[in-house]
Amino acid sequence: MRFLILVAGGTGTRMNRPVAKQFLPLGGRPVVVHTLARFREAFSDLYVVLVLHESLHSEWEEVVKAHPEAAVDRVVNGGEERFHSVRNGLNALPEDEGWVGIHDAVRPFVEVDTIQRCYEAAQVTGAAIPVVPVKDTIRHIGREGSAPMDRATLRAVQTPQVFALSALKSAYAVNHQPHFTDDASVWEAAGRRIKLVDGDLHNLKLTTPEDLLSAEAFMRLRADRNA
Image 1 (cartoon, rainbow, N blue to C red):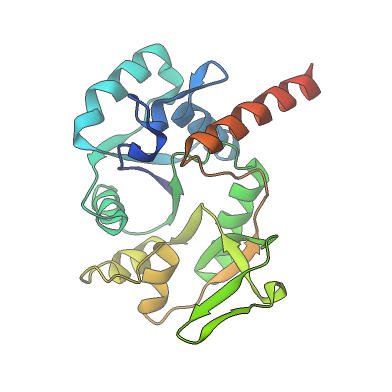
Image 2: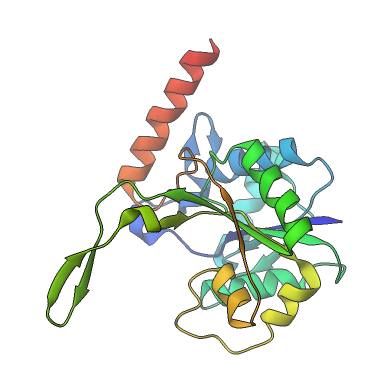
């Protein structure tokens, strides 16, 4: 069975908006509704858990009233850190076996084939994450100054990150550590390996007001192409 944990545990303070970023309007629908639609298109039988800050449950109910197609199987509270939010989502799943994807609710443009590619790769290897080449020049900062890094050896990590469910639950049965920056880092801390698959450059994470402007421009461009 395939599962999805959609992580929307924050309140989006960096957006400087009165509405949480996952609920901001984008092309006539809230961001999170766009995100869910991509996954429903990829797999119609997904069991979906939405991890949401406890103060936002009533807003979510209003979203579902306006967009019934966005209804999910479970809604659970977020935690102090992303690690705790994901663990809450894992604990809410009805089974211990299957394949679970973890995705940022504010990545509404992930391509359907990227989603499918991650789940398919995880079913072969146990875990898969999407990555893209780094476009910018990167410098490493040290005590003696800075030095350029070879960007050909670097990759930017995206979501969904997909794992064998029982093994991921086991990996999360530990205390939070500062270096747990994503689910792959928790998985690797348990001594397991990750398969890297091709991500996509459209898979933008909406974090700042500038990101939202980029998203709106992308929506207009896509609408023009489909007209």
